[in-house]
Image (cartoon, rainbow, N blue to C red; front, side, top):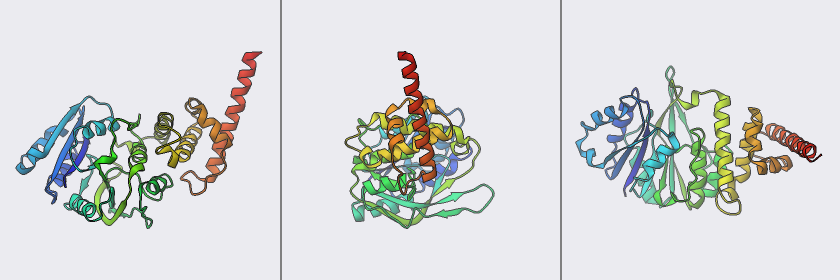
Length: 319
């Protein structure tokens, strides 16, 4: 069974050596490595090539794809277009993995015929010991439950701890997130819709580096919430409402986008999706949502005010 590993690369020369070494040292043999140079201005790609010299057996299975800088979602898509594996996994270029990261996930996929196999991970901090993160005590058995669990924070939506069957990727219909924040959950909401079987490996196999200088997750909260809302609203506008992923998570997507818009007072962004305003203004409380009930009610209140304001402006224009 062949596994494709996709690694977007941008401005990570301080970390990429450890990442590349951990990948080329994998115990699973049938692999391809796709490094996507997202217009990186530093020596990241040169370092990958230096590391590769120490692993001559991996040269034929390593591709370096060069792209203009378009951001993480587009870089992942560039890698996907090159992938030929039976299963696909993504790795962030500032992280690293255990030697049996791929072999453990791939072997479990073979044993169970699962569409998705996912593992636990380590959070790595610069000035304190790492933390083992368990995905959850709840393990969704199939894709629809996994999507709901991601939107309700019962499991994480990270791409890098989930090995997915390649057939789940329909590149012709896949909506690509417009911003590089919370893009994982936009991808996963679509990819897992047709997954029949999901399996959890109760081992931490991935090292997730936290709080590095320049990381997206260290950006300002307002900016990140707005970017997330843009991704959610764009997905809601782009996908059909009567079939596909939105039949599973459409309301969760709208509520999260609505809350982020209201929390950052970006009412212009929310107003760009009138359906969202109308639905959120009328929606009853959603139990077990990632968005707390108090925040849901605040969002509903804001949407009602927006509706009243829009109606008043329309009447004034008519007069």
